[in-house]
Length: 497
Figure 1 (cartoon, one colour):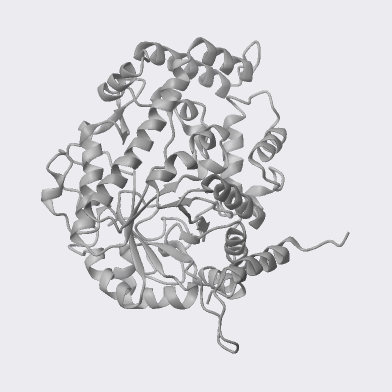
Figure 2: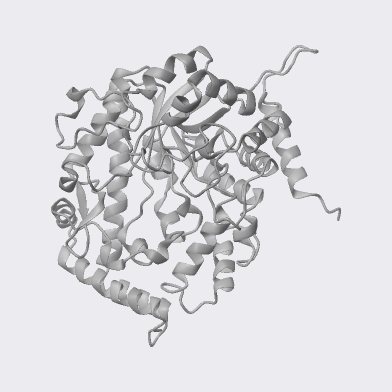
């Protein structure tokens, strides 16, 4: 059998598949471009530093961008602000960090009438003075035929006015830094902000992301960097969640006791104290003794889904033509429990599009961190390489060894498989699939780094897997232009530019 290069196969197959879907043209004419969505995540500071016209021209020239995902609200550095301090600055924008100025918040003008039903107000970002990113960028984007989607996330600061009235309650009884989906003040804030943007600006849609998971997976440290999780800090045990649980027939005290026992198990595992019957059996014993553990996990997950539905309904009531979608966290690629909770068919009715995070380059480092964490909890009896092989089998990947993946990242084949799986999960629905593609998301100094070829291969793989578009991520202010241009190379090979 002839040994075919995997990348060459992906390129040719993707090109054939997309070309077949393109309309016929008169002989001699250039083929018509398909209506694939090519998006990029970008924060307000990039337009302030470089100018809206310059940035938008760069996007169209380097990556044929037709959709902006503007970081309109966040208190986190993942999607707003300049490059993360300590990481190499990119080859554009101001060549300095904004350590002393970044604060976060709402980068658009706040219209108070939309926030009457919440105590959470005064979230206007102060980093950039009175700069309104929507007011500044929308006209220039529309002139170029570029659509604009407000991109906001579930990330907050502890020092905000009245934030304590929205925060989740930890198992310990203390307030968490995260906010509760069942708290009317938080729910009404989310509805208010999308109502504000939908009515006040000529936007094309909204995308919201919550990079969190339920208390069971959190206690087990089942995410990248999960080893630092404190199992005593799991959430949420506030009055709203407990009332909701009782309405479902769940006993909050039994749930609390179950999580206290789970926390003891995790603490012991982190200290290398193996249970008499092994780690896996010990966790199952706790689940059997306290079925409330999984009931509370699903309570949290259902609350997230209900938040999706509420935002969707609010936006559609304001302007039915606006698109509404969600950012699905990268833990979906590592943790089978979290993946089980991301039932795409279940959330499709309230999703015009989904951004499934499929970050290939930083994915190797993150997968290794996940394996290191759960090797001390749920899967403590399994050697780490065997544990990784198990995850490759159950998640349907074929990637390199644990010793290699932090330095190589994950392959384009991973992008292809994840896209194809998500496409199958959405079959029969109206929901568009727009995978998130990693361009220069920070990794440790000696770990895998993005390349133009890597970007090209990932974009090719996403379209070959059945994507309706791609979102270049995490934020333009950390991307190198050469790596951004890798996306255009893929689109040229596919005949999309």
